[in-house]
Image (cartoon, rainbow over the protein chains, first blue to last red):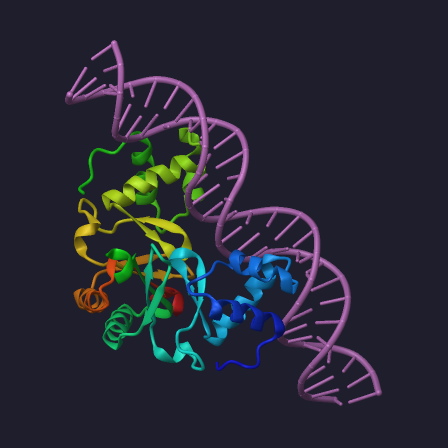
Length: 132
Length: 132
DNA sequence: TCGCACACGTTATAGCATAACGCAATTGAT
DNA sequence: ATCAATTGCGTTATGCTATAACGTGTGCGA
């Protein structure tokens, strides 16, 4: 699933996420796009749905927010399981990948014959700057 | 933080979660406790807050639900990072722990000087029975 | 007995997400 | 060329999740 050309709304939403310096909620995105004609949450959610599908945006389940993938130009789905460290003070997000973690989780699911569709790893805490 | 005696409301909420065969949302818990005098969401959320603190209940971030810890009588906080496999068809949840995963994630956060407070690992998919 | 901490109850509100309807544009097979 | 299917879009309404703010009562140590 590589990303086809984005529609106008998808491009607007993606642009907002890419320029943001941290994750944004759908309603925050909506507010930022009111000047561009957005009026309803669904316009945002529909765009996000596609952007997630294309793998250019991640959803952070633990904070109900969305963030542009840290690997511009690539499809995040190709990196295996993605993990996030989310600073609860400044909101910054670090994205990383660990094949060993992938491997262990995949082994476990296989041993249980569990068919994994989507895996979430989110670490909340304080980044170096904020912990000081 | 081991669990002190539960208050009436805490005990009611915990009891509902323990008897349930899967995770429940706060509002579902509320409905199940209306006969016991619960009227408002806050009664549930306040009890859940304590139960989470005591480590006898887990919150599943990806489905906004709560589940009793699979290790009755123990404090879940003592097991290190907890991972969940959540069946999107039947709602069943499997809870497990993997020290190697713990280790890799802890190493990563240390290398970034990120102070982890709470880590979420949730795998959504289909359990063996539902995938058949 | 005073002050404090804590659990609790209630009302109101904030924040997150989707259902259901209809319209317009695109595509692509016949 | 035309029709049907698909997709994106806009709007209204609604539902679900979570917390703010206020007040009450109770127990307990200074």
